[in-house]
Length: 204
Image (cartoon, rainbow, N blue to C red; front, side, top):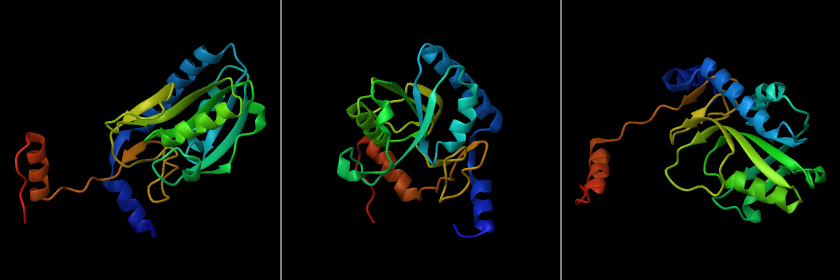
């Protein structure tokens, strides 16, 4: 995606999943739930950069309890939670020891990155690790980690907006969209239907 025309076309063809009002309402609801759950604590809140920046910026002012704020940044290379597949660009500080930590992220996809973050924080001595994600993707299978606080549930599609990007674009949108789905060819669709019914597929 290299030009304005293509970027605008991507947005125009996308499906709106949660408009700006929906986003605001869900952030406010989450803030109430987190405040109710953590009002007696003095937690460290860690925002996962850079996708969670937009969500964090709207959530923090609505949390009605004292907290310490920080940021972490991690990159996942493969579908694994082993250290060789996780690169820490900005690691947690040692002030997490003995503390309750709230991890704030934009989306829970496969759950692999969140599992790695949680394992790292507990290894560093965090007393408890909670997670708040604005979007939880329905992947159709078990995840190695789940969020304690969730804004919206989204389908298993490529979503963007409100901190999430599409080809590096549109993190700044106040709403959440899903990329246009390519239509399956008739043969592909028939084979998918055949697989569901356990009958022979169509060959070329």
